[in-house]
Amino acid sequence: MKSPHIVLIDDDLDLSRALAQSLELEGFEVRTFSRGAQALERLSRDDYAVVLTDYLMPGLDGLDVLERVQAIDSVLPVVVMTGHGDVPMAVKCMRLGAHDFIEKPCAVEQLVRTLNNAVERRRLVLENRVLRSELTDNRGLQSRLVGQHPSMDELRHRIQVAAEAQIDCLIVGETGTGKEVVARALHDEGPRASGPFIAINCSAIPTDMIESELFGHVAGAFTGAQGAREGRLAHAAGGTVFLDELESMNLDVQSKLLRAIENRTIEPLGSNQSIQLDVCFVAAIKSTPEADPGLNLRSDLYYRLNVVQLPLLPLRERISDVPALFYHLAREARGKYRREIPELSPALEQQLMAYGWPGNVRELRNLAERFVLGLWHGFATPTADGQQPLADQVAAFEASVIRAALIGNAGQMKATYEALGLSRKGLYDKLQRHGIDGSKLTHE
Image (cartoon, rainbow, N blue to C red; front, side, top):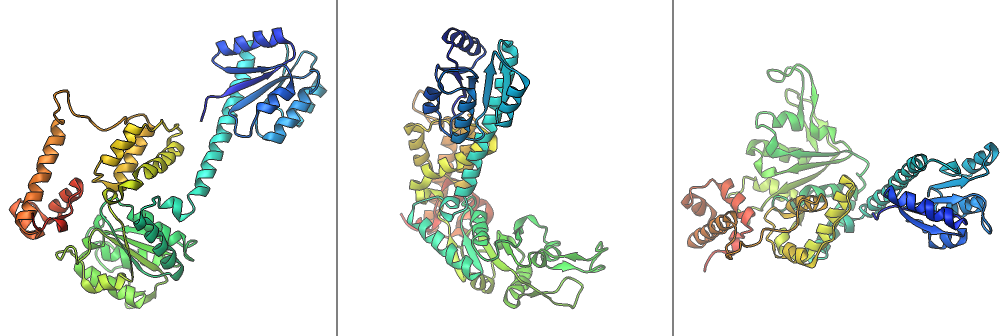
């Protein structure tokens, strides 16, 4: 949003110059006009402006200016001044929609206070318009899932088909690729949009509590169960259940979840009574059993959910989408923090395109927010002697060791993480951080 300005209309040129000078000393940008028609030609609905007009003028008087400004934008503030004021005139101006009515001569302090209030009112109006516009724009899949890469076109197509048919879906993607955004799009684009959207992070619920969380329990079902509790699956009636990080769920619970998905019924803990489920299931995993044979996921549950698979490419594999996606996220940050978006220079855009994005869209979002807040101006550049910063050198060395280990073990994950002294999860986290695709490193 540009800086505000005052549109000053007065046929008394000496008074107009003196008033403009006083307002400029108070920090206002002032544009002066001797005739109302001249000023109206320069006004538009989106102007960040306040009109300050004299009442008695040749041609269009103050009331004419007020009426014509309101025809351009009914909420653009107009302050009317006059040296011949009376109560009926003031009442008429206010009734027609003037922001305020001031008698000349007036103290500069009073005028500044009035104009500051009008400027703030105008700022809020324009900000609300921007936010409403962005909210409208974000309702479509094209704006929610930004990108022109062919994989994004296919993703949007599959979401439309699956949402309308209310089919159970499986989302596959690395951490930070936007799996919950896709799950919410599936919910919002289908007939269940008015129902609840229940997101469950399977890795965040303790193993001994997850059955109760999913299926509910009756009073006395276990120690501490003093009252009955509805499970999240039943609570989602008429809506969508999103099971994030499904592979972190205990295999025994996966078996019970499979029965619930197939039969669309559950039994709360401690009860023999079945409860019918009216939900659509969407699950998310970081990899597939084909790509990672050691994945902690029952094959029957995988095939049951994999009716429609929605693969999300890591950001490094659709790097052409990064500039548009970065600006989209910056627009969201602008509304969140009420800050203007700084200019994105060609050099910064090149840096965005050259980066590997191990944290995917989540990392890009964080960077866009820091950019809007003025806390990011580009990635670290090499030091004066041409050396990369120490942290970058360490990261590059770690990545090279992991690549060498993968090649030496023919891409076998188990052999690699054992050789490196890592846990399976530790190796996968490092692969994601460094943007290494282990499946492509089976030989030199």
